[in-house]
Image 1 (cartoon, one colour):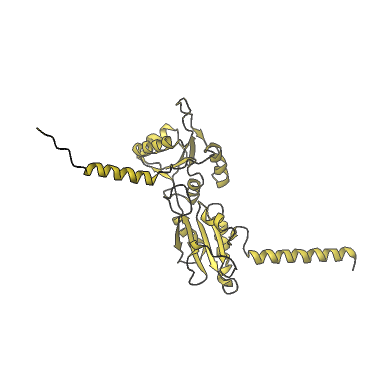
Image 2 (cartoon, rainbow, N blue to C red):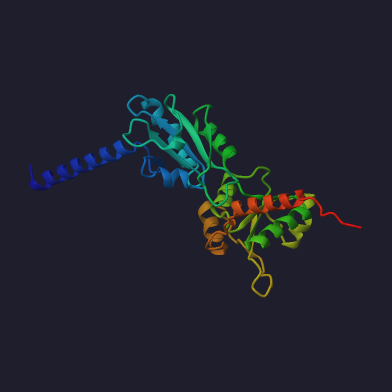
Length: 294
């Protein structure tokens, strides 16, 4: 056997070993995140997006651990939600948020609570108890995704939307769509750009007819961005998304150009001071009125 043939065999062997190591670490494609105690905080606790986690024991749950359906789901929702797994046999500190796993495999959804100030740490945890088919899991995931979209139905709702954007100094993004139900992509965008722009969804009905005429909307879908007023109070002309491709990457690139660079965070209130002020007012109200001598 020639030296070249030996070299080729050696390269194949090295590649096989590397492939085996990768497979042992994460038996899925790169679309599925292998969770551990080191990346749990970044991938789940601090994430503003929904995370769907499969809890398994690799050696015992082989059939349920790496089904084609889980891989299919990861490919279909790629970019809008996170699909992950946690090997219950790994020798690592178990995060408190995981809760008690009574049996494996177990599938749970972790999503941020909608009202929690400036953090994403508080989560709603939902057990998945339906068919383990990609289409069923996607339907569940679409319904459970958090959303921060403003739904406009008439000029009164639009006025409230504008007031909210102005009050927080946020650019406005208006999505005119004929879809009756909000898509998972639109929900994703509302999460991704939360506190950096205010996304509204406008359906073509009689209540929104004047809005569509105002912005010259004749074909759907249509997306326009209205920047905040300048320092002089002057409004800027709306910026229209001109492409026909409404894919996630294209929309993210467009909105990134017009969203604020830093999020507008809620102001922290001094609860201790508020409580003291409240008690002071109550004491004042309880004081007896001074007697007046006639």
